Amino acid sequence: MNWQGVSFDWSHVRAFLATAEEGSLSAAARVLRQTQPTIGRQIAALEQDLGVTLFERSGRSVALTDAGREMLGHAKSMRAAAMHLSLVASGQSQSIDGTVRITASEVFCTHVMPTALLRLREVAPKLEVDVVSADDLRDLQMREADIAIRHVRPEQPELFARLVAETTAHLYAAPSYLAERGRPVSLADLKAHDFISFGDISRMIAFFGEQGVELSQDNFRMGSTSGSAAWAMVEQGLGLSLMADQVARRCPSVERVVSALEPVRFPIWLTTHRELHTSRRIRLVFDLLGDFLSKDAA
Image: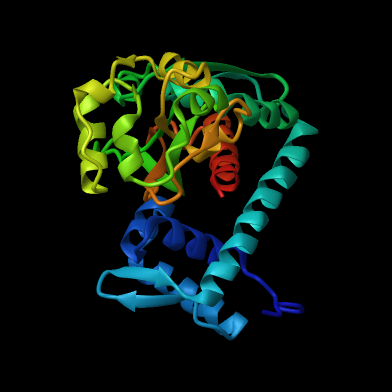
């Protein structure tokens, strides 16, 4: 698609981004604090400027067309560039400082967040960051954290959430385990292997049962409620386990097995309290994390 010479209205691009990320005009209107007809007019104007259709409408929901999906990547780059430009300009007269508390799952805190924090330190070197390892949203509601990275959309009305990515998980094992026990190739092979549990064994048994693999408690002789501890067991060659691909690719001591197994697909939601979302400091970290996680999952 050739957009050379096209003049963009940034408000129209923001409406497009919000609609693509939220999945409907009404949800985009809530995020941008505008009316649904206004969002619709802005997207229609953008489509007219570009000469393409960006969304297919189906009832209250919308779906990106091929042109829309191509546009989405460019629009996200525009948002990142605009954010960086704003930081550079504001940094000349006012530094961004203070403390921001970010909560995520233990595994994400250990393997994914450090890379994100490197980028954050580049754009806001005076900012203080406290990473809170937790798996629920109570910390946000009680103001024990400012921003949460979660895999389910929060339902609490006082929380603001943005879907930043859809990611996948596959089955992984250490080479030492595969050398000792053999490499499972088919789904049927998995019945003879050891698995590491991440707390809820019944959910893992149910997942594999849906895939046609009948596992039992005997397959899960080791595990931990600590995600990092359980993943360390996998890295040490004690068994197989499912893991988010963006975590596993940071761990050269494991490799993916059983390509026939359907991947687990799950969303990544970025959440904050609505009252905090208007804070310049919180909004900076929120937007930077959103862009980082979107690219990292891809």
